[in-house]
Image 1 (cartoon, one colour):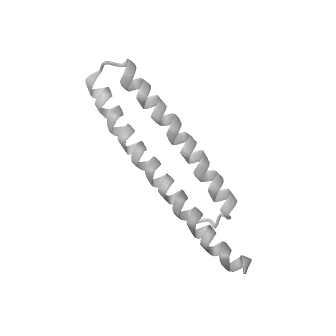
Image 2 (spheres, rainbow, N blue to C red):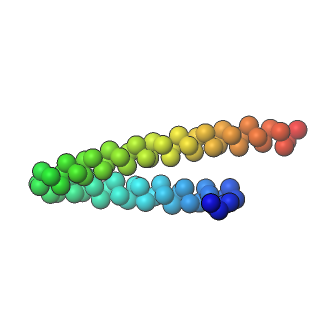
Length: 77
């Protein structure tokens, strides 16, 4: 696995968050405008999975920020 610096890793996570948001919009449109029961069910399942991924990314961002703040104390002393 490649070793990415913090800024590149952060940029990749931001791109992933944007892509998740776009996919969520697509599935919401599918659910709203198409009456096919099977398609709606699949879209709802996918939407639920994307929301779980979004929550995970949000939690990981909070943990990462907390870790950076804790480590910064050692460098600022």
